Image (cartoon, rainbow, N blue to C red):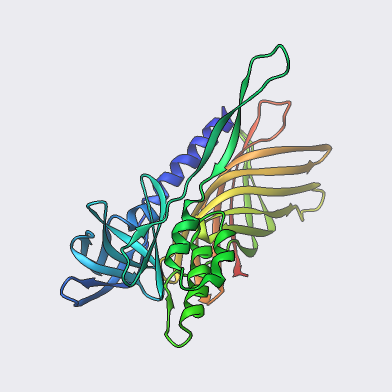
Length: 362
């Protein structure tokens, strides 16, 4: 039951957090060609393809749909242009502009990529993956059976060759393009442009985010343990956490792991506790101040007097990061846990802790 409750909490928290706003400096290009500057609500690919929310002031937020503006862009970041696809206006993410231009959108039907060239229409690159069931002859005296086979379509190769037919040297790379992604299409379009027009400029709009990013966080603080009918116990602790995030999926969500050491320095007290956190954290960037929340479990190795053992906790955390330099934050964390103290006793421990430290983006 605890595991189910934890999973439901994680799912609910993720849904709520995804609904949070994240305004970043940017601008909107109106149909008249005029530019409106402000802050753009940065969300997931689904919303970015449907509408643009521009905050002009703290009290005024304007919503624009694809048939109302030409384009919008986050400063030095993602660039979206309004185009008509299948009799419907949408915002396509502009990946690269050159001798061929490439666009991307994610909607209810999944991910789609488009290619455009002077003299040619904007065209969707056909691509799909799935499972087909292939009939195979069975062993003698056994009926035929169908076997599932994973397949990937190859129609996109023909389309890319057509659009790049004036540079046959790139065909080998096209033929090895067994899947479509932002990065491999940008590299392909860049290579084609350099092959047919060295002197003319091109521009890559897609921000090249790393596949994974690691951050580290050294901390120190105080742990407060409250057992039923017992007095409150407070112990100092030190901790070191590692955060693993995948910016191409969502730069705000990370997996937290680490080690925390809690010891008693009182004479005659024999207490030693080690925590190993395994949690999901969401950090919401708001300029220099970054609120964060998390949930997950802590795995314990405990020594209290003659007792030796392990246990786990359900934990919930909150806090703030405050930027002091480009890749360094001050970190403040508050964690609340419920802990079964001894596995063979019906006794539970409530724990809370407050930690301060630094947060380094590697």
